[in-house]
Amino acid sequence: MRNSQPESPVSSIGERLSGADPRASITQLFESMRPDLLRFAQWLARDRSLAEDIVQESLLRAWRSRDTLKDRGAARAWLLTIVRREHARLYERKRLELVSLDEALESQAPAKAADPEGDLFTLRNAIMRLPIEYREPLLLQILGGFSTDEIARELALSSTAVLTRLFRARNKLRASCGMSPAPDVPTSEAAP
Amino acid sequence: MSCEEARLQIGADPAGSTPELEQHLQDCGPCRQFRAEMRTLDANIRRALERPPVASDRPRITATWRPWALAASVLLATLAALAVWLLYPSDTLAREVVAHVQQEPDSWLAQQHVDAQSIDSALRGAGVKLDITSDRISYAQSCWFRDHYVPHLVVQTAQGPVTVLILRNQHVRGRHTFHEQGMSGVIVPSPQGSIAVLTRSGANLDAVTAQMQQDVRWLPDAH
Image (cartoon, rainbow over all chains, first blue to last red; front, side, top):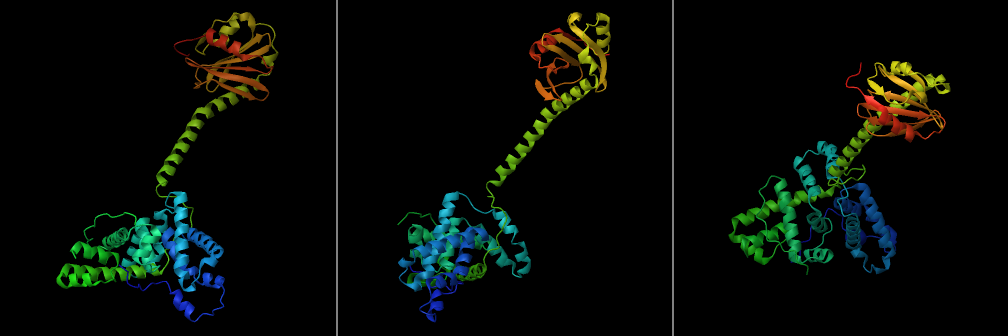
């Protein structure tokens, strides 16, 4: 199944490039995406300074491998993939959650006061609290615009497993918003 | 398509659609409602993700490690307090013993042995008796130390004079050696107090200490 084209809050790089100077350097292209990459990394790592490190390292890796990028229109997905892998590398290396979630959530308190919509604040907290195995595919889908199959390839999972994780991620968020969660689905985590 | 399959598909991608799903929704009100709710939720998720999370810039301490870090801190604090409790009194006692001996410099200079009556006088009120022969003791006084009278003796040895303070009311938890103000000393625990032995000539204290531990008899009640 191919996911519908999401209305990603990440601005489309294709749109950006349509009127761009074709001679624009690859450096400019990468730099133009830094804010989107940083936001993606922040939602993955839940820590700004860590996310900045991840993005910096990712851009460095991307620069070293720039010759493998044949289609500039695919740069966004390519870079997001690098960021995700860099985060995963760090996560694997540390073998731990890199941020005290309580501290991270405490630090959001001022944002709550400024946010007239409490539900949105609750939702942001709930996303932060999602385990990485659910948060990661959700971010890839919504922020990255990846299809189920693309997520499956990236995470080395079956498409059914990705569907299950996406379903569970939303189901948890649904419950956090006070809605009755849907009955869970059987686990299917087999790799393709 | 079953309701379970439909909800899995909707939950995984609320905006998505397939002919099979649409056909199921035509006949299933609950699943239609579920999709409507999930689309609303999904719109909110997208809004929530528009802004990056506000993350802490503080040091990265894992939530799972925090209890262990706290436990380790408590343990360290306890050990530190225990160390202070164990060591501080001995250090202080040693310092005060040295200070007291410094106040009586003439005690080191006495060469002639004191008689048994003077020794008994020095022991009076200290709650102890001494079996040591008096011809080796060149100084014997009853000194006021830490709110009690304590026998202050100087014992002559082949390596020079050795000062002994019999401290009935000062308890230590183990043998404590010290080097301070040009003196070397040891304080050893005894059944009802402790004994401090000092030298300023480098005399071997072990023999005198062992002798005093053997010769001092602790009386039931101090007077």
